[in-house]
Structure formats: structure tokens, C-alpha cells
Image (cartoon, rainbow, N blue to C red):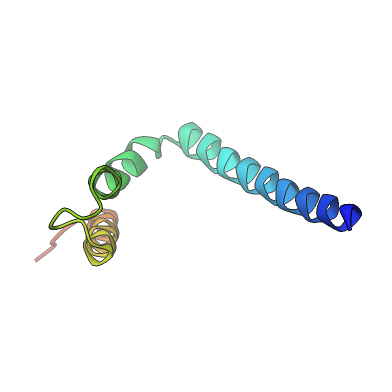
Length: 88
């Protein structure tokens, strides 16, 4: 029984290490290409909404749907900026 528990722990720990290395590799690549500032601007509204939700989950305006809406707006802004904004 202990062996099964240790194997499960090793698999979970290994998966976390792989995910962490992946995130680190993406961050280094973005920093070298100069895209880190753009990512930071895109993620800022999401982090503010998440911070409000963590600070007081029962407060009005901190629902999961608001968090999802913030993510959708940030993605739309990113795509709009990438295409050059409103080119009419």
C-alpha cells in the first residue's frame, strides 16, 4: 500500500516539475523576444479580478463569470492589438 502511495506522489511531483519547466521555458522565450511586456499587459486585468475574488469571494462582482469575462476581454484586446486595432 505504501508503494502505491509513493508512486502516486512521484507521478504528481514529476508532473508539477514538467509543468514548471514548461512555464519557465515560455517565460524565457517571451523575455528574449521582447513579448513579456505585452503578456504582462494582457494578464493584468485577470490578476486584478483573481485578487479581488481571493480577497473576498462573497463580495459582489467577484463571481467566476466575471473572471471568465475578464479573461475573454483580455484575449479580445490582445487579438485586436495584434491585428493593428481598428483599421477602418
